[in-house]
Length: 100
Image 1 (cartoon, one colour):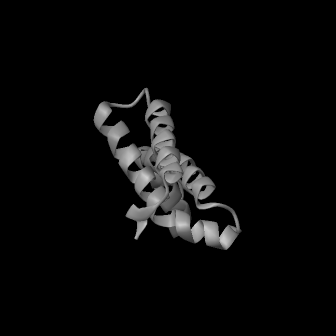
Image 2: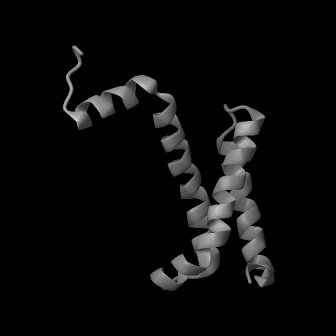
Image 3: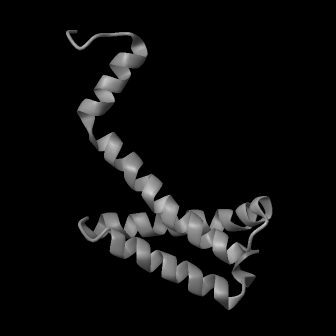
């Protein structure tokens, strides 16, 4: 179970969460908190598998997943919020043109 991780794992997870929180300083507090919860959840849940797959430590894996998870979630959220970009992407995928 992931609750029996060493203290270094929890320090790394908290430090990565603090980094994610600080990186989102321009966002509303609720958005910042949701990004922290999402990215640290990804880090905690996937770190063991990534560590096994990559051959590196789980502590390194939790930091990498948590911090890059934030970046991926932030980019996806930004793209989804850009309605014109999404509409254009759908038009291109469905074979439509800009004049329709």
